[in-house]
Length: 540
Image 1 (cartoon, one colour):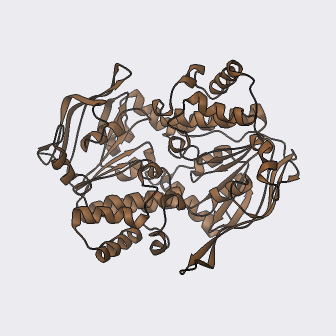
Image 2: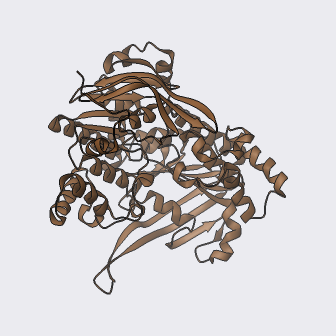
């Protein structure tokens, strides 16, 4: 008998009086110490299948009309809450896809990991603290002891994902379900985390169910692969055999899909839209009863850059290097020092009131579309908010027309404005986030990891969309990403950051083809290692 067996699993959702078949007759098994990958596009049923194992779906909205899930012979479908509690987080753990929505924003890192150790291991406070520090060091979190007192919003996306992995590994589970565990991290951290998961699997004889859209990760990590689409497994088999000779048309489509193309051709002497001179963002470190400032974290330390109309400047670097902080500083969303000029006007010393009319011309698309879109508002209300603030779009009926046009421009139907974010896939939510920014007709857009949580085919679609919008509206982009394939497809110029400083800066072709610093070369090597096919590096 297999360690975990899923047999003819069906999952239905009741949505507004109708039944949606999310998963149909899915079967797979995992042996102890084995890695099985579930691969497919957003909405294919991967995560729903995985959540069913731990019975974490929102019952009674979700139901299992048929199928069985057994873990070491114990039936999970319909199991009692007491039986499930003994397994969840102890024998079977899960790393969720979106750490910002999975971590409690009111609790520190230490408290969230301690909770698991208290509940399942019965550790005392000192022992739990020591184990928490050990786990954070194990997953490579920088300055782990200091980070223990941090809250989730004080960590970067990659750092939050490391905390999630530490939580999942706290009790050394027999089965780890990893739902897109590396989507929010840069290539060097991705390589480290994958190596860590591989080593832990071998050391603990742990089974690993890996859910991912990244075929490079699948090739590197998985023993076997199941390819899913529209709620069904369409192909399954040994990893090497499936990659060498895919049988199903959908599998071949996945293998062929990745961001490509070249940046939009723009005039080298076009108008400078945004310029930063010696940008510095220092966060104080306070200690003692009186909370005196004893030092500073130099998140951004003396950066110069300029972004021209129709151009894209890509910013790359590891998690915590200061990429997002730089983007927020340029938009005056956080305090900074140095000169910031927008369309030639100094905005660094302008008041919030004076800045407000300029906000429509400077927009941002955030990393996590699920967290950045209010679940209480319809898509129309979300996009309409900016129009109302700036007094644009006319009356209600006129605004609906404007919102519909914005949605159609990003590839969604106009009637989508009457639905809510949870009704859309990850890629569709990111299109909504882009429409929210574009409806105000901005001149400058900061794109903060806009493709990191998306599967490969959707990444390619979003990259093509961003190029089309840039051409249509002559937009200036600051594109923040850890995915070097996407950066190369979009950026004219690349800025490489590390610990708040620029280590290399120049034209994209120069940086990618002939990097000058060891750090940039290490980034390129880490990215290309994940694209290795039978020993040959496939360059993007």
